[in-house]
Image: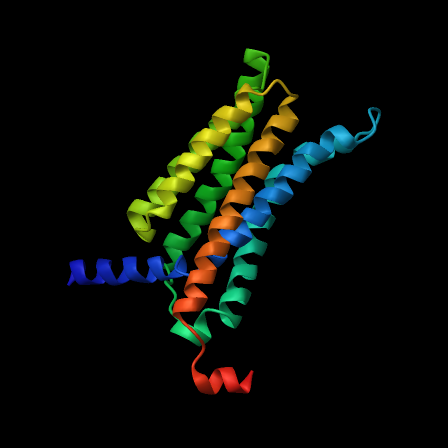
Length: 213
């Protein structure tokens, strides 16, 4: 029974990635992050705005995760569920709370680590490589534990490659991080778009729904 339940749970999670909508929305979030990070250099030199932007980064990331999740559900409600049905995995309340605490602490710890190591080393040029490594490993874990879709391996490879390449560019750290976010965000969005086109082609609306629309 446990094996059957685990298999059902994996199928439900895999269904969430079937249409590519999540990748498109999150890819857009990465592009916005690229603009946000690069925006530090576009502000006046004597402005205090960069300090406020740095301090609010964790809040912005968490807010972005919340909003993207809502946006993904809106698109799925309009596009996916009318075609292949509504299926969603609901974690236990304790599991969901633990996940939220883990995400918050991970973001806070990462920002503190980046600032501390950067000041100690004296440069932030390595930051895109670290971001690429973390995102790539996350995608591999998602592929193994939930999605079982091979495109996540390619996306992980893209994250590794873009992170390393951006670190080698002789730009200011803000621009190299922005370059990584922009490149990976565009690739993520494009992958999601291709997946969505394939999904729509293979799963047309039922005739009565298509007629109503």
